[in-house]
Image (tube, rainbow, N blue to C red; front, side, top):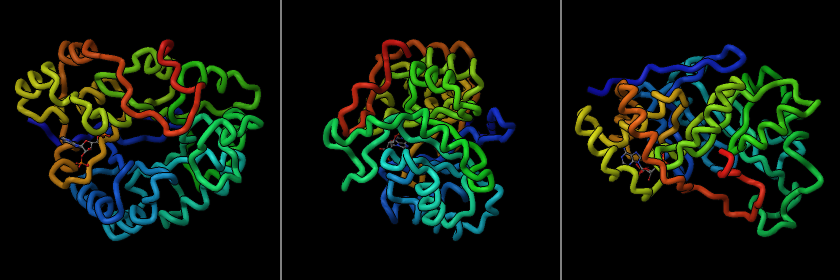
Length: 300
Ligand code: A2P
């Protein structure tokens, strides 16, 4: 039987991060307000958002209205590409929208810096990429963010190649606490996971259900295990993410799913490994801008 998840992982600065967090990408205003309220009531302590999602204000309102003590929550938001040259500014904007004094984790959303004065936050072509800047310089600035505003800093959508470049840079003094990546049974990214573990970087799995219409929930192995453990397919996927020691961020705006996604089972190693083998190496989330220097799936 599935029970409320209690897993926590330790970041490389000693801070604890709850294993299951609510994903909020593509969650709209009223929907996300209700989802956050439902989640906190169900026992979630971890909410994941980003400046670009455009829902920080509503999430901040829901957090406040939930009445829960701020220090009992773990809130993550992310630096957008157009602000790589000024993370402090983007962070302040996010804090203001969230109506919070600090976030628990601040992530560089993508390794790619964008033209900081572009009219749109999404580059249309290569001209929208800020080739004079680099994620190494962005990280240098992120390390200087006030510790009373960000408890931990990390990255997102970084490949092994990019992490190596970052860790080997002379300006890098802090190892990212986390790397948030697309991860689910069809894209387990085992090499990247092993690499991150070896560097003491916690992996956070976004789109753990394969986002929308991936078909993973209809996979025969997932269905068989769901039957075996008397849980839903989504609960198997979320439990598998915990089994392989990744933070997992299922997104839902459906109250019953928000609640059930927080309930997990302990998978046996044999069953966890069986899921490892169903990979089709299929990526469901790709950015809407042209970028030839992302993912490096052959290496990951
Ligand atoms: P909805 O938000 O309407 O509930 P991911 O976290 O991989 O990005 O997946 C999000 C998608 O999966 C959304 O379409 C979400 O729909 C759906 N979803 C979330 N939880 C479940 C669940 N327990 N069972 C089936 N689909 C789910």
